[in-house]
Structure formats: C-alpha cells, structure tokens
Length: 303
Image (tube, rainbow, N blue to C red; front, side, top):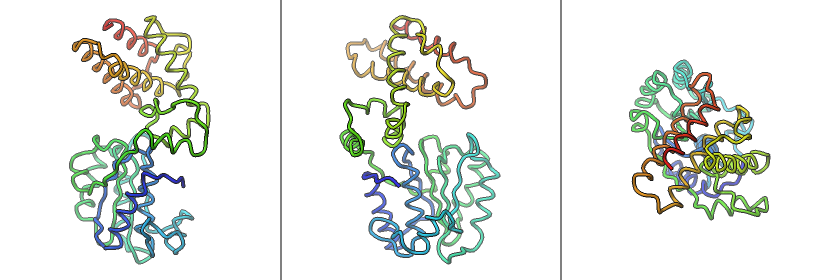
C-alpha cells in the first residue's frame, strides 16, 4: 500500500480506541477514494482484526494480519457495488454472514466501499444490522460523498474525523517520486483526489485533461464545439464534463468584476453541469455532442 501521510493521524486515533477497547459498532469514513478512503477503511479493518495492534495500526505479523495480506481472512467481508448500485441481495447476504460465529475467535468486520451507492432497499436492509449488529461485529462504511447517504444510515454510525491535506501537502507528496515542472493540482476536483492525480500523471490521462481544458476554453470563446470535443471518445465524456465544471467555477473565482446576477447565473450553470455528471450513469443513449453544444449555448447567452 502507498504511504499516505494524512491518513496516519486517523489510523493512530482508531488504534488508540482499539487498545482502550472503546470501539463502536459502526463507523462512517467520509473520505474520498482519491484521498485514500479505500486504503484507510481497509487499514481500520486490518487493525480491528490484528492480535497485536500498534500505535499506527495493525502489526503486520500476526496470524490475522497474514490472513488479510493473503486475502483469506474468514471474518473480513468486503462489499462493493454491483454495477452502479449496492443491491439489497448483497446486503442481505452480508447481514446473514455477520450472524455466524467468528471463525478466528475475534471480531467480524464488514467493509462497505462507496456506500452512497446503496439503493433504497439495500439501505433499509442494512438498518437492522446497524441498530443491532451483534457481539464483536464492526461495520466500516466508506463513502466518497457522505452527503448522499440516507440520514438513517449516517446517524447510526460514528463519524471518523479526517482533515484533508492542503495544496502544499499534496504538492509535496506528489513530488516525492516525480519531478513536476508545473502546478498539476488545478485538476484535483476533476480527479477526486491526490491518489487519482498521481495515477493520471503516470499515464496519458493528465495530458488529456490539459487538452480538454484548452478545448473548452476555445469552444466557450467561439461558441462552437472545437474538433477535439466533437471527436471525443465515450470514455472521456465524464472527464470533459468535470473539466467544464472546473472552468466555470474558476471563472467565478478569478473574474471578480462579474456583476452579482451574472455570477449567480454562471454558478447555476456550473451546478447544472455537475448534476449532469452525477446523472450520466443512469442516462440512456446520451447524445454527448448535443449535450456539450447545449452547455456552450447557455454560456454564450449569459456572457
């Protein structure tokens, strides 16, 4: 696993709870996977199943740690979305497993990744287990966007306190293994977090984001889609929409001379763009060119 410095204080706090035996039955880790949310949640699980937990989490040497390292711990359950949703049958199967006796004589730990993807039926099925989890049962719910969770779910979990790294900390971390000739953190909101940005810098995705930023600037200025946006492939559509959102938000920050009404209108357009991004997964047969051109026309009307 990667060494992520901003996760260490959170792991240390949880380790202390384990050592003091002051552990809750359910935790909500509202940390985006791009900031290490997945790794943090699994580190919590590993520490909870460790036989000799240290000040910085699991020891890494005991039988519990070795079983997790081999992806073979019988008391660790990891639930991920089936497609775009975590479905009710998945949750029911998990809850049934959590009623069985621990095979290693310790805790039973369930990790739910991106739990905001719980559909309504699945969320309701999880509620009873959250209310009455059983002895030595620990549920760890990781969420990229905890605000999208049902209130009945989040209210039954302890919130993990996490402080996002500032830009300087992110730059320092990104510079550990590579030499950066420019500030690449402009696209953090697009990427979701430093981990995804680090991955993008290793392949062609970051260069594609730079090109998308140029393409949108040209298209918004001319009022017509440039050739690159017309010929965009389907895999880049999500990135293109998020880059457009970022450009609109940056205009609000940098162009302070905009009158109040125009600022509101640009802000509303940015919100519409982001709402479209969130709805992409459930929008059948989207005409991306018409969608992009519609955004450009709305922007031109405003300006």
